[in-house]
Image 1 (cartoon, rainbow, N blue to C red):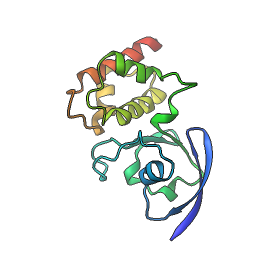
Image 2: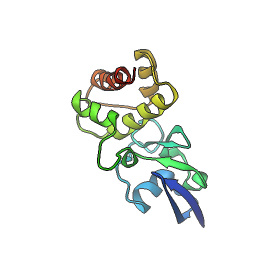
Image 3: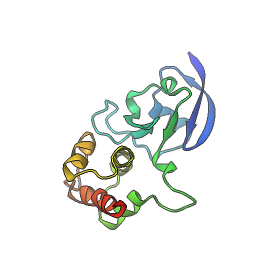
Amino acid sequence: MEKRIRIQVNGEWQELEIDCRKSLLDLLRDHLGLTGTKRGCDTGDCGACSVILDGKIVNSCLVLAVEAEGKSILTIEGLTSEGDLHPLQKSFVEHGAIQCGFCTSGMIMTAKALLDENANPSEEEIRMAIAGNICRCTGYVKIVEAISAVVRGKR
């Protein structure tokens, strides 16, 4: 069964027909071509599909697309402004927090949601925030350093 929904994605309103069984992840990747949001586990365990939905971080694989009706979604593609990388994106590059890159968009979106709520988190708060995001390459040290550098820059 299909349903027409209206959602705001990266600042632009979209009206779409979507199968009621499809996830927000499916909508973003397959219908809107926003492939920066990664499909990892499809069970909400890895964080690769993390996006910001009405100001809160969510695993888009666990949210039905129809649940996003009337809501605002921010994906990794929405962080750039006029071609400029977001400070978190720049910091991840500068600190070598990107290895294979698979977890990167979810990590950055999680960090963005954290900094939107708490502009000055401690290292422990950063580690707690990203605990739902799995990285098999870096051991999280460089990721925490990259997020911490952005925090220090905001002080």
